[in-house]
Length: 350
Image (cartoon, rainbow, N blue to C red):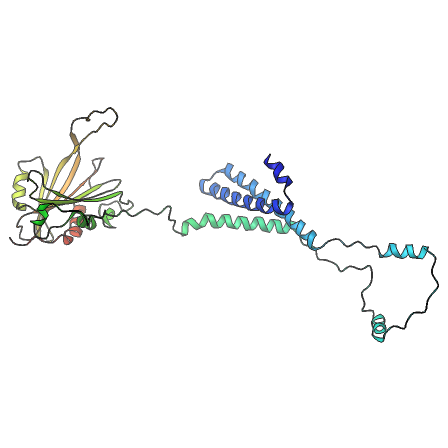
């Protein structure tokens, strides 16, 4: 049915759309064939290009016929017919003008029955040139993605949520110069964070920040935190504004489940490494039950650094874990701490 409708259309209405559609489809299919190394797609694209070349050839012939129409030569036939008929008596003719005589003597006037030769164009050469042009477009489409950045393939940058209008808990008002969750998120969500973790090819999936309080403190201790997730690792940074010094915190670790405890100094501040397992919570959304019990999750590595050089109290935790249980080197946490801590105001003397 569609082919019948195409045949009913006039030539100059039908051919240009066929050429455009054939060119676009041929170039696109050939590009996909080169990209995916598919022989079937290459054959299909070649069919479209050959079809387009034939349509171009037909249009070139039609244009040539319209520009150089055939001129019927009937002068000799008319002369023979005139000789066969009886000649009339000659009548006195007026004398030609001098200018006409000069033209007749010089032989510069047009001769009847002669047509100026027309230089014919090679239609097949034009069709091959059109195919070569289409091939050049295919080559450009194949090479361009390698040298030009594509917005569709470029990774989207994850930004921290805007929490400037969020009301802070009362604990933040009672704490001098506390950092907020949004500020922690801005400090942690760095362009080089993946490189610091040892996975430079990854981009952040999510970034968040909250203005919470420390547990078991009756909401009297501010504890903002931020978290950035990657495919491999998850990084969490929190600041706890209590009066517990790092030295006292190390003593408490001996009574807890922390392992691989190691003390050090970061930016002139006392710090300590520790390891502990995260919690694993299973939630069943289909059966309507509350889910399974809380289990033990993968191991996490934490670097705790005092909020000031004098260790007056309070600390910043940088924690890294992964679902596979793999952990980066301890130096990665030190590098992250050296980037984040300058964005957190040091705690002033009480």
